[in-house]
Amino acid sequence: MKQRIFTFLVLALAGLTACKKNDNNLPDIQQYDDQQIQAYISANALTGFTKDQTLIGDGATGLYYKLISPATPGSGPDSLKYQDQVSVVYTLKSMDGKYVSTDTIANHYNGFLGYMTSVNTTTGFYFPVGAQLAVHNLLKYPGANIQVLIPSRLAYGVRGYGVGSITASGRIAGNQSLDMYVHVIKDQAAYDDQVIKNYFTANNLTGYTKDPLGFYYKVVTQGSGSVGEITQYSNVSATYVGSLLNGTNFDQSSQTTATTLTPYSLIDGFKTAILKYGSTGTSLSLFIPSALGYGTAQQSAGIPANSVLHFEVQIASVTQP
Image (tube, rainbow, N blue to C red; front, top):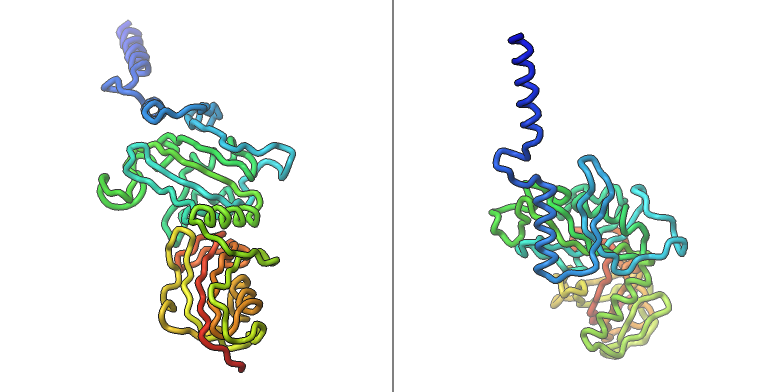
């Protein structure tokens, strides 16, 4: 009889424990994240968001999303698979406002969708798993873009991201949900061309001509030499500045000191421009799409994958080998 009473008490206590949320009756992490996101939506007067009900290991994802420009299924490639290579432009903000990374010129990714959460060995950045889920499950097709509110458990968790104290501007604190914009590019050439045109409009730049190869050029100063004197193997003494469209110079070493260039060794856009339009004394301004620059490869000089490049070039002299 005593044994039966003891067993009953143990089972009763176990049942009471299972019904209790936690010792302090506080919300669990899913509830905490949802409250954080709801407060963010309210504080920023966001509209048009849907809560994702896709199930993962511990329940629904808890993502909130808004398709800004959805792609039309059937009008292009099949829906995105994890083994597909994608070109992504993104922005990222923590909901406490302490981390903001909204430079779409710098924020590029090119690689397999399934590797988005892998650490970039150059920058140390990696996408939160919530972003990868949003692209795969919600955005689905290249050519579309999405704003997604990512709960902390699918972001950088309790540890956060970055180094330094939790008050550092370059750090995402633990248990911070995120506001992320993601655009998966369908046609990189068309995207680059539009980026260049937008830059011209924003900066009131005129007088540029689009070469049939795809880059834009402007002869700022007509040279004293003859166009055509530069060949693939000419020695071209020039000063130049290379920059991204956010103003970041990736090659500053040649701003004042002339460097000898040989066209055959240059990126396609730069090479073709000086062969077709350059001569002794010519100054050129160039805007080069990524396919005629460094393409999908991220460069150690701080050039992200699929970057449009801007060059200002002054040709001092041309000699033949």
